[in-house]
Image 1 (spheres, one colour):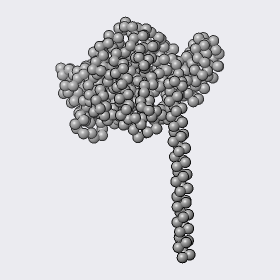
Image 2: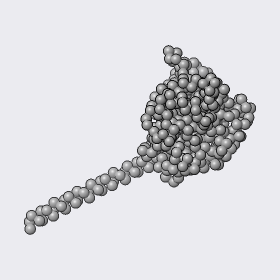
Image 3: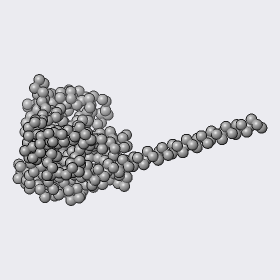
Image 4: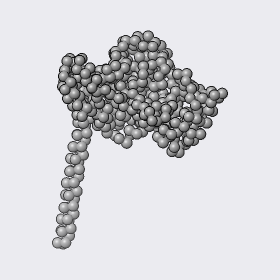
Length: 422
């Protein structure tokens, strides 16, 4: 979510990896007073409305209500306010659209679906090794235990590497690491930002926190030269959401997660990162935002590179859209997928697939509700209608088959009685 921050427990020792991303600590009274001042409404009226949005169907949290300024009657009509949804409601909607549930885990699996993409000629980061407590084929680069991880990190020649959990909260990117090399003289790993890590300590944390669910080491992907000029060497991905309502996949919306120059990942909650609303037809940036909550600020240029972002068109955009559509065509039964797509120096590259994309990202990028008829509401309502029609047809078929079965049984009884008479 937009204003999430890592919540630290001071009783716990400091860790290398941000393996837990906690909720932001909110000062609701201060937010109420600020909202009152901006909107001219009473605090009671605002608090009542906030309660309706957090407890009701929309399932927002308090931070989102204030971050998107839903309290502002001068900006939003009642109908426009009703188009905002929270993460829980987003997930419920995705469940309705993604009815072929047996495929969801496959698509979300970074290893299995990644191999499928690669075999289909779709660019995907090269796998180097996999950490797992569960046995895997050794040909997949299987590593089990702290010692095996540390040995791999000391001896591999595959740097630069990017490490990330195989399972977990993709929208938060907890546990990610960008490693540029290994220094044998100090027995340390070098990170993308110039800092170093103790090999054994890093290997221990990867094993402890991510060994049970799996951890993936991949060859690092570098951004397109035009992206480097605009936002630095960080790999900011585009979240491109595609849907398939039975007539082939099509793009729904897109947002570019823009990195600060030294960011390890592109999540909007990370300090210095930005988020842009992308015209899905043209790849042009229509709005660029930074900060979160009441700190939301619209900008036109990148604060570090100085490059103009507003109105800029992303490189290789038509090919990027085609890449996502090609990937979705591999699993046409899945209704909606959120692709994290890198505009890379070798061409558009899929970094991850998410069958439960958090649609609050659209709201962070645009400042508008995603549950509008032309974006998500229409897709959802048509999915509900298809399910109701399918259920009605199944019930009708079952009734027909039941009536046929009873007719057969009655005929058998009659035939039996006729035989007795004979």
